[in-house]
Image (cartoon, rainbow, N blue to C red; front, side):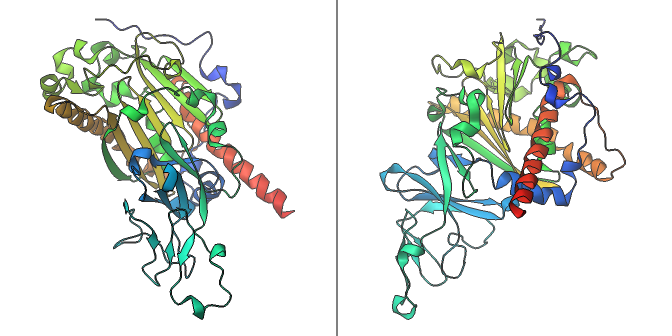
Length: 421
């Protein structure tokens, strides 16, 4: 069965966004330790960051911690009374001990409690962050508990996704930050897709280098040839995505698609045929009802996938009846931690559970194929031999991510220079 890939509107995608330019770009933002430090201040301490979902704090007292190394931050996210979700810096106000941790202070923890108690001197804090108990309080000098509650972190929720902002005064509300393209997903039943599979990988590349791999499908015929239809594998077949769109620092790429079971058997793993599940998820998914038009902003038919890339470090890939979530957490100028999650409607029987597990495993295999390129890319970039790289029209979102990062850093530098005058 032949596949006809939709063409972009008149003119190239990149030319629709003239601020991006069309010349070669530099990747120095991915090799410089100095730039990495600036990213921490300019982006990860200023942007809204997704750290979890409401399912991670299912009841009053449920909490988890998040280590954000690039921002030198450790954060507690907790559900308090009244179903409110709050965030605090993970620091005791007495002597600065990390408040919630187990054997290794750099490892994230989760659990449930009625209050937070510091292991060092026993200070206690309520779920609202208020200081409730001080050991031998009479020994202190005019200590007012109201002055020593946990240090709050701005926290908000969009469609069940928990976001924090480490800035003292965020420049935008969460919804303003997300903008109309991302909030076009409003109405998608994220709350119904609660069966989750997850894995984490520490990678030897800058975080943006891995994000780049999911912003274009130009690499698919070369890197994933065993799992794409023959018309895509033919050189110069013209395989491309059907729709690219940019809104502020955020991006979306949508692809057309054929149903997996219409492909020849030789383009599937045997387990995919046996379980009727794999690269594009289960072949059968529950009917979720009418989906919001914002999932397919280009009006593609047949629609396959839309990948919403929320600045700076989260991607939500909607496959219709299920979705993927990726997060990239920088750990140095040339390493990062990659978190991946698959979300499905809860399995109603053993077969559906197997379908979900197979889809998760096959998707992990393909993500690792992408990750396998990263070390080579990072090592070559760090030689500094070449500093200008041409990008084609399908790599518009790669161009946009790196420009957005540089723009945020330059804005920060201007702000700090002005403040210093």
